[in-house]
Every structure is written in structure tokens, then in C-alpha cells.
Amino acid sequence: MPALLKPVTLGALFSLLALTTAFPPAQAAEQAGEGKLSIVAWPGYIERGDTDKNYNWVGEFEDTTGCKVTVKTAGTSDEMVSLMNQGSYDLVTASGDASLRLIAGKKVQAIDTDKIPSWHTIDARLQNAPWHTIGDKHYGVPFQWGPNVLMYNTNVFKTPPKSWNVLFVPQDLPDGKPNKGRIQAYDGAIYMADAALYLMRTKPELGIKDPYELNETQYKAVLDILRQQHPLIHRYWHDYNVQMSDFKNEGVVASGAWPFQVNMLQSEKQPIASVIPREGATGWADTTMLGASSKNKVCAYKWLEWSLSDKVQAPLSEWFGANPVVPGACKAKAPGGSDFCASNGYEQFSQIKFWKTPQSQCATQTTCVPYSRWTQDYIAIMGGR
Image (tube, rainbow, N blue to C red):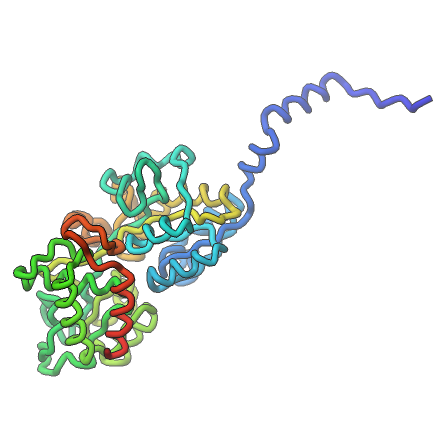
């Protein structure tokens, strides 16, 4: 005769049923998250207070969600694409010259905006931006935007340089010494757009309407000026730490840079300032994109939502020298107490030519030179060819 089962009280049965109904296994797992999250990011984008304890937007996220964040920094968009090709990262803070390549290469996946409650707070100019939107699908959440500035040494330039020509044309600088060996250029092929923008303003007869859309004649003019620039270059930079060291120790006095380096050098009381010259500037509007092979999607969506909060947008804008993608964040208090939207050019959105991947099919020309050519030729130029 089988043993009798131990009776279950009616109250215990109801409690068990209530728990099962309120927290089904799938939902419980979704609430918990996977416990980790890996991000490929630009330097200064994912801060946990290691450099300055006042700038830490990772710690609270980890404490609240249980998702422990690891970050791999990348100095160029090409490096980001290469890292995402490995398929081992959950998120990437991609600029416009990488995002479409990642989408086309199926290295990122479309996101469900319904899982991001703060989606409606995003700047309307960025919600459907073409560098992360294909048809009715969004492949990421806007993160930050800003200009590529002309960083300069204030001991050499008593007044701000008015033109990018200090980087492209051989000349004596205000201290009476040549610019040769004292300037730098970015070592990513997208820098060719900076030269194209300069020519767009200074040689209107070329007919350049978009610095990322160049016909063969316009493209040749860009190659010519970059070859003219090469003998002047001290270093083609991509590591922000190396660039800052060069300004402090190697006699470099002018270069295109991110506002991040300007802020860091100024915090060290270095004689550094920046300006957007009269020709305008290229810039970046970065998007946090979800890796196609992400194994931590719950934590990833938690971060995508967290990234839009004032606790991220305000301190990041002040720290990096960028602008928030949530307009309301301009009114939020940042650790340094600055009016970061005013100082970082929030009202200059329409003046910035945001990075995008050059395509052979383009809007302003019959056909354009594709990015594969840009990459090949810029490598040659940096090598002195």
C-alpha cells in the first residue's frame, strides 16, 4: 500500500498559485536580467568614477539592475565595426559612419521601442535619423551628439583660429613659427570629410554640397589637399591620451579633436581651448545599437532605457563636451554645475555635418566615391603616398 501524501493546506495552495500567476518563469527571468553586459564605446562614454568620482553613471545602473558592465573602448569607427564583427559584444555606441555598415553587415539587430519607456523623450530630430532607421525599423537608441572641434594652444593663438586652413595650408602661425610638425589629423578615413567641408566653403567652384558625397573631381581635390597636408603632420591620432600627451609634451599646437580632450586638458590647467571655425564642422550623432549576437538582451534593454535618463545624459554631456539627445536633460544638474547645452553648442545642430558612411548611390551626385575608396586612399596618404 503506497504511503499517504502529506496534506497541503488550502492557504498554502492559494499562495503557491498566486506566486506562479504573478511571476511566471519567463517574466521572472526578464525582471532579473542576465547579470552582465558588454559594451563597445568611445572613450569617456561609459564612466564609473575611475577618472573622477563625480562622473559615474555605471555604478547606480549596476546596483539597481544587477547587470555588471564591461566596456571595450575604440578610437575609430572602423575599430568599432571590427570589434562588432567578432560578435561577442552586446551594445556599441556607433557613430553615423559605422551604424549603416553594422546594419548592412547584420551585426546589429532592430530594437523594440516599446521596451524603452523613455523613447518618446528623444529629440525629434534624432528619433528617426537615417543613420539608425531603415524603413520603420530602428536599430538603436540615440545617445549623444556634438562637433569635431579645432583644439588649439592659447599660448600660440592669442585669439581663436578663424579657419581650418591652419591644418591644411603651410603657413607661419601667430608665434612666427611654421605649422609644420605642430599639427595633427585624425587617422580615420572619415577625416576626409573634414577636408571636403573645408573645400566646400573655400572652393565653391567645386560644387560640393555634402562632404560625404563626392564625385571624382571633388574627390581628387580632397586627395590633393590631404597630400599637401601630409608633410605638416606631427601624428595621425586616434588615441585621445596620446593626443593630449602630444599637446602637453611634443609641441603640437592645433588639431581636430573631440571636446572630451579639450575638457580633460583644461581640467589639468593646460593652455587649451577650442573653436568651430567659419567653415563649420563635421560631427557625430552616436547611437547605442544592440549586437545581433547579444546574449544579454534583458540587461541591454535596461541599459538602453537607463541611457536616456538625466542621470546619464547630463553628466555625460558635461564630461565629454557633448549634447544630450533628450532636450529635457539640458535643464538637469550636472556634477560640475555647468550650462553644458549652452557651452557645447546645442543650438548649432543645423550647422554640423554629421558623420555618415559614403555610398556610391547618393543624393547630391549621379554617383559618388564609396567609403571603400576613402579607406584605401587615406591609408596611402598617411603612408606618404
